[in-house]
Amino acid sequence: MPAAQWREQLRAFLADHAGRPPKGKAQRLAWSRAFQGDLVDAGLAAPGWPVEAGGMALDLADQIAYHREMVRARVPKHPCALSFIVAPTLIKHGTQEQKDRFLRPLLRADEFWCQGFSEPGAGSDLTALSTRAQRVLAKGGDGEEFVVSGQKLWTTQADLADWMFALVRTGGSGAEGISYLLIPMDAPGITVRPLRDLTGGTHFAEVFFDEVRVPVANLVGEQDRGWSIARTSLGHERATAFLADEYRYRRVVDELLALARATGAADDPVVRQSLARIEAWVRVLASNSRRALDAVLAGREPGAAASVNRLVRAEFDQILHSAALRVLGPDALLGLREPTAPEGARWTYGYLRTLASTIGAGTAEIQRNTIAEKVLGLPSHLSGSLAPEAC
Ligand SMILES: Cc1cc2nc3c(=O)[nH]c(=O)nc-3n(C[C@H](O)[C@H](O)[C@H](O)COP(=O)(O)OP(=O)(O)OC[C@H]3O[C@@H](n4cnc5c(N)ncnc54)[C@H](O)[C@@H]3O)c2cc1C
Image (cartoon, rainbow, N blue to C red; front, side, top):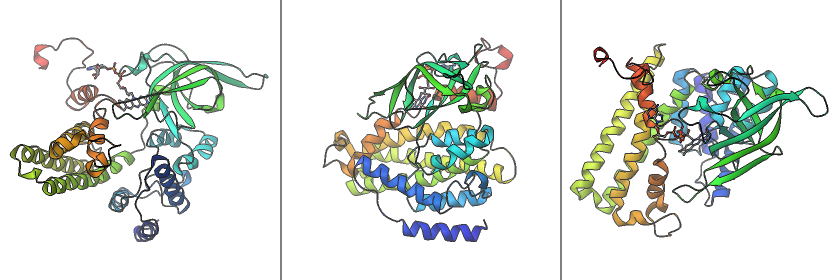
């Protein structure tokens, strides 16, 4: 689609859909689902996806412009972020039937997905996972199916999800013998037990599988080759979406600065110090994103800047919210249910939620290992003590 055309259509669409989210969790969810549905029906979703997968196939510069338009208009985020982890895998490794069946409902948020990777005995060391899927003749003798038994842990939105994309053990040990399976969450034998976190909410759950039968047609890619499949990402799609985050962060920092001025907290030298730190970080994030972008636009890999950005963003989320609590002073103790809490307690809630941002999707320590080994070329942390000449 030519740039002028999509931009005009998107702006008209956003003008038509302007408005603030309703109060109440269920109402907000229904609102953002309806927004996604309309966006997909208008052909204005998934700017980086191929057209045959329901996307817009925009070039990189246009994808970035697209994300900026969306951030500026403060549109609701897609209500199931995990969908965008499974989607690139389906686009790259899925059968045509899987693409036809899953991609459109996923994009429209008609169906929610959860990620079944972590287990009680497998987190950072994910290749130790032990949830077993045994391939057997289907009941009734018609074809084959997998019988899944085991447990997943920390499964975000498991209570809302229609489907789980799971890594399961079909053979061997370690990375060998792991398969990538799509499991319907309403299958007999699945039990979801929500887990309460620091915010008081139940954002994740533990999921138990007791001889759950899954058709072989739900296997993505080859059996036993799921580990490499799980590492798929859709080219630079994520990098360009991150660039839009830079605008979101700028806006959030400006909102915090405005709050500090309005409450008079900005006159406190200790608060000013932490605000100055936030300002420095948000600028580092912006210039790092720009470095990654320049590389991508020049046809190179985003490289070190992109790896470092992920870690910096996770830690930035935390220091941003710590600074917000300083700005609020004693009011930071007022939680979501307290009607007098400043700005609906968003900063206190955000503080509690972002404590997990350096754990989920790979801990900060593991990210530092990756940067040390893949970016700086240091010896593997698994290879024992460092030789003196390597230091
Ligand atoms: C909010 C949130 C949402 C999540 N959502 C999901 C989800 O939807 N689906 C899913 O599958 N998982 C999910 N997870 C789980 C997450 O992926 C794991 O918590 C994470 O990978 C760490 O695994 P672990 O908790 O088992 O910790 P462990 O791996 O046991 O690590 C414990 C500590 O040891 C450190 N450590 C471990 N190995 C090393 C090493 N080699 N070098 C240095 N330090 C090391 C870690 O950094 C950590 O501090 C979620 C987690 C959180 C917090």
